[in-house]
Length: 489
Image (cartoon, rainbow, N blue to C red; front, top):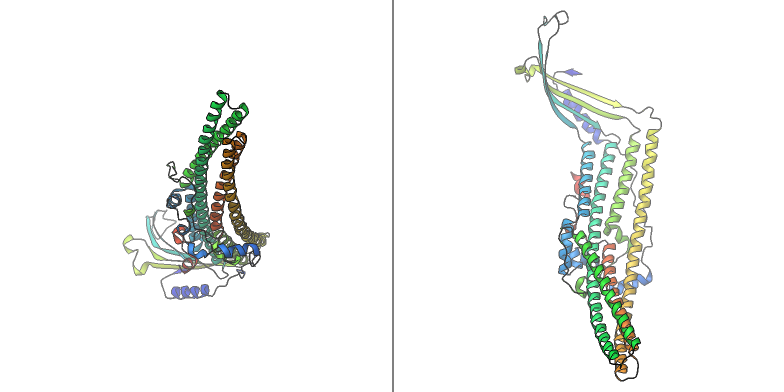
């Protein structure tokens, strides 16, 4: 209906606002699924954790855990320049925009328009104008608003919000993974540097032995078997140096890719050291992972999004009410367009009732419920995987501690064996084969010892990640506010 301005329009608008506030929601009540794992870790794991593990809260920032300055610089550069992480950040912005679109549907749309027309018709059709051209000018504002009686629009907005928050947690998970990848690559380089140093020292020692045996053989005081065996051990050590050098080059290339700044990384540290990272981590209870692990947090947000979609699917069975209104001026002369005598308004409520959809609405509801069931299964699986990862890393830490102690004794024993074998050979009590055999075994146990140390450090780094990793706001996306702030805007 169209008519002059009066107060009825504002009364109707006020009634519409009250009706919207009285709207209901068909969202199912959300209940966090029961913990699909044991309420505590195994006795062996828990005992080890009590002896070795401190407070996780002490390492809210990755810089508190990874204390090596060179490693810290690499991680900072990776967080700044890594391309995979940039892609993840853009996905957060994508989800933010999608939420903004859905959230905008909760509010009225307002637009302005203006038009001018000049019309000329025959006199017999327009006797009043007597065939003369007629001008018409229109300007005003238009608004439209869907009254969300059943909570359909709110449910869609809630779903988009939770998807948005899930991408925030996914970004944090991606950051934690990148931190661990950089740390693990750094540890591999330290491991290779130390093993290379040992292998090169072995080459020098075996070259010296080979030269000595060769001279003795040439003057007739040595035998060819000792010489051939010495040459074999020398070539084995040289091959090991070549292989370790290749592995080191590949790890440098990987580090260059991870830090993402385009420059070639050149490591400055010669070998593994004890002050690369902290040694104490607090595991807490399995339920603590629900709040600390970003992948679990993301899975729960996706579950909440699926829950909200059920509410939207249920609300689709009910009528949709839209209020349309316009206010402005219409005149045959431009200078009279905004005159009070030429003001006009329109108020046009619209209701759309689904009558027959061929089962589309029911199928859409079934689809939403099935997707929620999938989200529940994914959420529970994420928790189970997290529990397994924590337990595996704790058990591995315990086992590696023991192996390193054993291997350290093995290195000491092999060094003593080499010393005794050299003495026996110098005294003429044995052949040089015993010395060569002791040298070979010493190189092997030294290499294994360094590898075990690297494995222990990598396990500790992985444990830091499996327990939730860095939770400091420095590692979170600055463009993503928390859930409470989002709901208050």
